Length: 265
Image 1: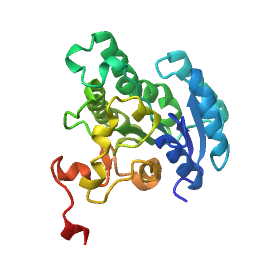
Image 2 (image 1 turned 30 degrees about the vertical axis):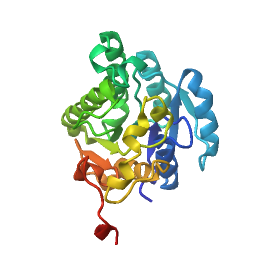
Image 3 (image 1 turned 135 degrees about the horizontal axis):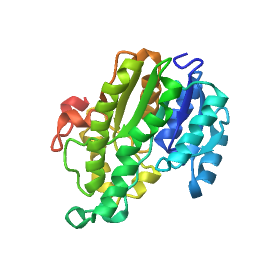
């Protein structure tokens, strides 16, 4: 199996519709042992999701913006496994005034919160878990949404995703000598809890399936989850600093293009 004997940390599991849940499920199916993280009011949601996975994993408390939490998780994993083979960073947040067409009026305080949680946190978590990974190498994967264009209503989260892509490249540069790969998965729109927090999400999602060459099901995160599992495996050992699009091919076509009847058969 792709992930036989791998020890992995998975963040961001909130509901069975979460990309992170699909990734955790695929990882277990491929032989990995996993631990989940959550904090605050979301802990109960993550605990319920853990029961629905093939093997119920432990859930550790971690607010990625709290250095003591990150250190506590690192210490737990060191005692539990003595190493870490990889982790999924499925963490993002922006205050409501940083989304929904308010770009010009968003205050710095909201932008700072969004950037720290959605982009800087990848560096913070990588640095905190590096001692567990640098001897054996491993894989770090984060979740992206194509930051090459200015999307309607996505606003400062789009800027944060552009920052996340840059953080990915710099971490790939600095962690490569330790044998650690760092990649982003740029997923098409999916109906997750995170999506519900974006005003006007349907503006982006409704036309995606008609324009993507392969089509796109906004209710099915499994193609993204399985790609994450692949990137966490040794089969991706030659890939780092990459933005892997799992979006039905939408990114390659352009916003105005649609599948033609001839192409649809």
